[in-house]
Every structure is written in C-alpha cells, then in structure tokens.
Image (tube, rainbow, N blue to C red):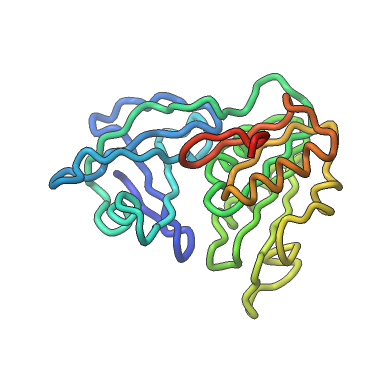
Length: 239
C-alpha cells in the first residue's frame, strides 16, 4: 500500500501499487477488487470486495472503505493497514460497469458508501460529451465522501452537474454550499430527472428499492436501470 487518506469520520481511502512496480490491469468503471489483508491468525483467509473509486487508467488502485464496528475486515483495514504493507489483491472484477457508446443523459445516484462505484463512473463519463447528473445522499458533512473531488471534476467538466442531499445537516453545514437538499432523495426530485436518461445507482437496500420503484413509476425501461447490491445479490423487481 502506498497511501491512506481519511475521507470523513467513517471512510478512509487506501491506495495500492504492485510491489514489483509493474502496471496494474485497467478496470472498467464500476468494477471492484477482492482483498485479503489479514496475514495471521484464524481470519487470515477472510476475503472482502471493495469497489474501485478512482478514474480508470490511473497508475494505482483505490478503495474507499467504511469502518463498520462489527465488520471484521473493514476494522482490520482501518486499524492495521499502513503505508508499505503488502496485501493480496485480485484483478478488477464485476459486471456492474458503465456501458460504452451511449450518449443518453447519464444519472448516477448514490446513498452512503454506494458512492464508490459511482465515483469511478463519474470520472469515466466526465471525459465524454454526454450530460452527467451526479446525485449523492449522505447523513451530513461528517459522512460526505469525495466532496472536494466532485467540485474539481465539475470545475473541469461543464457537462457535469451535481445534487447533494444531507439527511440531517449539522448546524455548521451550509445549505447551497455544502449541500443542495435537506432530507432524503425524494420521489418528487427524482421525477425531475431526464426520462430519456440512463440510470445507475448503489446504496443501502431501502434507498435502492426507493430509487428502483420511482424509476419504474416514471416509465424508465429496464435496459436503462442499472444497480449493484453490496452483499448478497438480489432482484429489486421481486422485493
């Protein structure tokens, strides 16, 4: 590992390069890697998957990990993984990827740590000419991930716009500066999105069911609805 950087109170990003200096395999926006960080003891074979949260083609892999109090591997990574440590990683995996050759408006919707694959997709799409809407729902500034990066991407790419939702803003959080909307990503707001768009979303189950049901109610076709579940896979249409 070559770098670690706290994103907020709960999430830290970890950067990796090959120990021998050779190039990493380029990932498709939305893919993940598997990591086996624990080297000793009864849990040394524990494997977890984390989405790559950086721009495809970067000379490093970045995962952004939320520390879960009951999460064996996430706690280990936060508490024990330091610059210079060597861990076992796979090549990029997964089929939840940004489709190529599409000029429809792109809508990226995330809740909480579900922002990680959305961020990689944002980096990829920002370089195109298609319109990109990046919407992020978090608790407040203590859980707001990639805030500075998002602003930098918007400044450099006029085709990108964003909408940030704070569920419970702190007194120090400034409406119109830190966030644009208070509360949840509402059905009413979602219904203002382009109906000819291509939608990708990731987040907690309740968030995803809400997004899916709203998009279906808007008449969005299945081919333009794309999502990923963290944990056991499931079909939102049957939930």
